[in-house]
Image 1 (cartoon, rainbow, N blue to C red):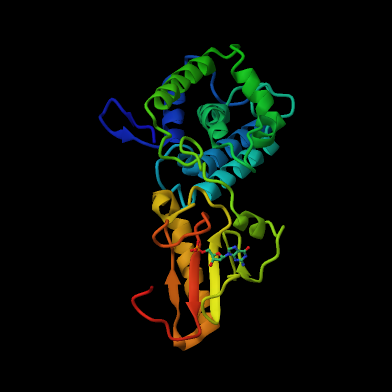
Image 2: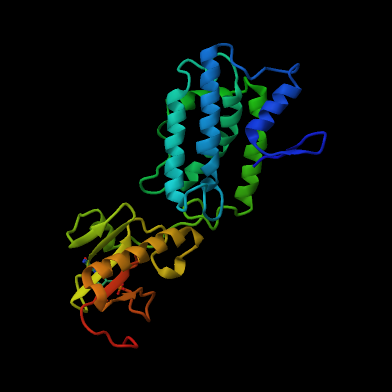
Length: 304
Ligand code: DGP
């Protein structure tokens, strides 16, 4: 969050308020940042507001080590929402340009441009199956046109902003900023497993439950009358529990909650056991995190 101190010493810490103060205080210098028509001014307000409320609030998903990202606990959900909101702004942007609302530069250009420098630099790092980066697809054609204009050198202030932010991002690259962030730096290099084909339904399984994050299906080699596996639909580096990071707390919590619900649904008051095997000694055979839910008979303790 940017912060500016007024000459009185009072701190101002909301970017839109800072921008309006600067434009007000230096009204005799440079452009007014107020587009020339009523309609363009309305669009300028709308885009600047959408940026501040819906994009800036979650942009930490691109570079923060761990959640939360605004209201999101999942980086993938936050990034998906970020892309959605950027596409909404693309829909509102002027067709002809060159600025977001047409002929004149406005607060919306000043608000979105620094975020766009971030997104251009960072989003391609998150490339992975299903997330191949394509600027037209990620930002939309109008924002791509606007980005080309803003970085063409014909807006000197934009060139300066670009150089400052891009320079700082390059320093982050060099300092290993992304190393702990899955896909941005850390890769999921483990081999794909049979569970990918179960998730994609290329091979059949007896599915008990599914939602957008997890799948529950019956184990092919049951060790008890009830034996289900709860797995994340996106492995996200979780070939084994030992690879869990703060980024995974959300999915780990979800898997356990679903395991509890499904165990209760299948076995009611009799109870059940929840097991995660990690590695050779535990006999892990499939390297895609899975929670076993086992019950329907009395289980011995300690396990064998
Ligand atoms: P683990 O040993 O914790 O890695 O358990 C892996 C479990 O996965 C094992 O109990 C058997 C089950 N499993 C392996 N392949 C398949 C399959 O193709 N379909 C189903 N339903 N279960 C499978």
